[in-house]
Image (tube, helix red, strand yellow):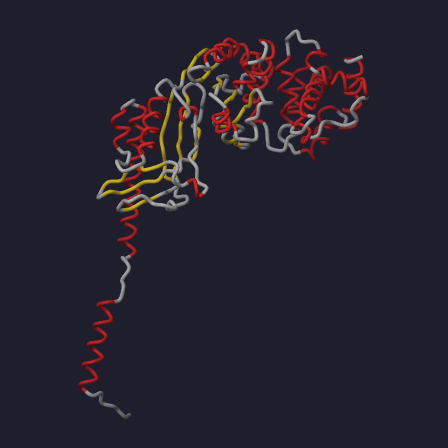
Length: 419
């Protein structure tokens, strides 16, 4: 075996250069150190959110605003103070936040701070007497660290990235609440006349729905009367916030396994609902509250003629509105010719929407005359949990006949009802 000697000068040079390289090469923090820093940040921001929630429930304004970034936009700080004050009359049973571990994104123009953080945050709140389970909504919060303390800096800075903070009625003005045995009506200053009309009808509407559907639902309803179009769109979505719609029943989430729904609200369009006659307002409330009662039994894709027609059946039930007044467009159309098919789902969103609703009401009224009211309810429970492709099979199981026979019987009913 041969061996080669390395000159001493070369050996010293290599050793020196190696040491220099080790001294100037960038070094990243050890994984354990980085993880500990992230854990500390999560704990501090989580504690901030807990303080914020406790302060709101305790009505401690100073504590609620103490964690707002002193360097934040003054308009944001004012809005947060308004939010706290606007919630004073709202019957909250629960209010809290949790970090979700979702998106972590920096704003396009981060504020001057030692550190910024935009984790996923969920607001969880529950209305006393109405919500069995808490409603959950997204809060697109931006947090800033100044020195060793974290603050809430903004709830709008992430909007250019598509992350938005959910807005409730309390984001649009002071809330006033009128309460009765059947729930409550939440409105703002100026909305009292319609709110009083709604409260006068609310208990009767809840009883009317319960008479048909039974007691297996909350039997407590929150009716929201927004201040205008912007709030209406925030509560129900822009697709439903139109002048043609007087009211909408909304929910955050439906759990088909437990047959329950969270965050159910009836939202009224103040311009349209305020112009309704007493009878029309009564029908509207019973219709929308029916949706609240049956929501847990209803899946996406169930036939609209059943969902909307059943709600109208309950809405008009027991009243003194004759068929020609309840369905004037249908009465006129029958004189031109009888329908040859059930209303399609798309009919409830187009130019013939009003006619589709009237057809659906007459269909459910016809089914009640044939099956009896308990039979109609049973059919609803069966059909509301299936897709359109399965409707014919369920009809055969329940009535002994399929869709063609239903259409034929309905045609005869229309001929006799609108001679």
